[in-house]
Amino acid sequence: MSVNLYDSAYELEKAVRQSEEYKNLKQAYDEVNADDSAKGMFDNFRNIQMQLQQKQMMGEDISEEEVMQAQKSVALVQQNAKISNLMDAEQRMSMIIAEMNKIIMKPLEELYGSVE
Amino acid sequence: MSVNLYDSAYELEKAVRQSEEYKNLKQAYDEVNADDSAKGMFDNFRNIQMQLQQKQMMGEDISEEEVMQAQKSVALVQQNAKISNLMDAEQRMSMIIAEMNKIIMKPLEELYGSVE
Ligand SMILES: [Ca+2]
Ligand SMILES: [Ca+2]
Image (cartoon, rainbow over all chains, first blue to last red; front, side, top):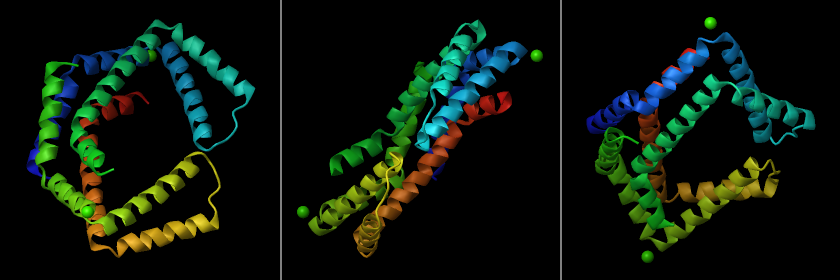
């Protein structure tokens, strides 16, 4: 990888780290992490989500009970202000990442677009 | 998204566009594209790959005949110098993209790593 690409990538990394969106996300994470009850609830929610995603990816069936368990864990975390704050911050960060990727990948999009 | 993030993302986009790896990829694509025989072979190869990937993602079975058809199309494109050149250039570009992503995503990796 050329020096120019490395330098530009590290510049962008610095910009991500210094962005309001990243700082907000970090703060929201720290707040959940410092609260044992919120952290437990959130870890449980994440585990359930991951298990369901894995089952979907493997083409396995998801039982009615599992769907209900997932819905319950969503309802539970949404009631927790620190967790819903974190999930909002994560969503904003995801949007930023998607926007950045769209910009960076434009040269490749142009290339593939012109060939197909 | 902040001005700083936009600027840095566009700087990186420019660096991608000006990189040797991207220029090589573009040239390799243009060469395949200008050669009807190579282009036809490559399009056929890509279609077969995509169909197989889609089936895998949907958890569908892949027949022995389909596996053999895929193997034949791989063997065919590997014999074509322009196509194997393009596939090498694509692989190098993929590695660059993976390296860039690793750099840019480091702040998030640190965050998630510290929470889990
Ligand atoms: Ca604590
Ligand atoms: Ca032609």
